[in-house]
Image (cartoon, rainbow, N blue to C red; front, top):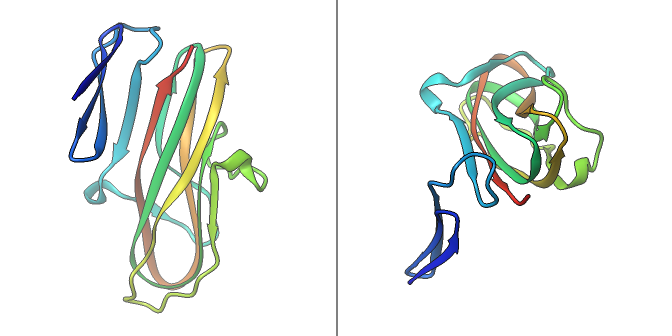
Length: 156
């Protein structure tokens, strides 16, 4: 089943899943943006330091923005955090309008590190700006890297 929302945007439903595809021209409602940083190009984290994982440039408009961060490496870790932020290398103040996840969990070196959603948030952009997926981990005895995905859908 294909639902045509106009302006080149269509929603496809297959086996109960809905996927969004867009070839909308710039500055059109329904325009979809995304950016990712793959595991092979993950960014190194410094202990207890917020770091940009990836970013997304948005023009003027209102957007629904969502993101997911994954952590990898070999270290003894005591906490993880990720968020959608309008300020690079900075976590928003909790509760981060729903776009902040903090996971206070201990992971022994060599253990499974988390993949976690940063949440979703409506962002109103008055002038073109960059939005960041940021991550943070507290750890010792090793290295931790982070990679992730950030996306936005324009509503106006």
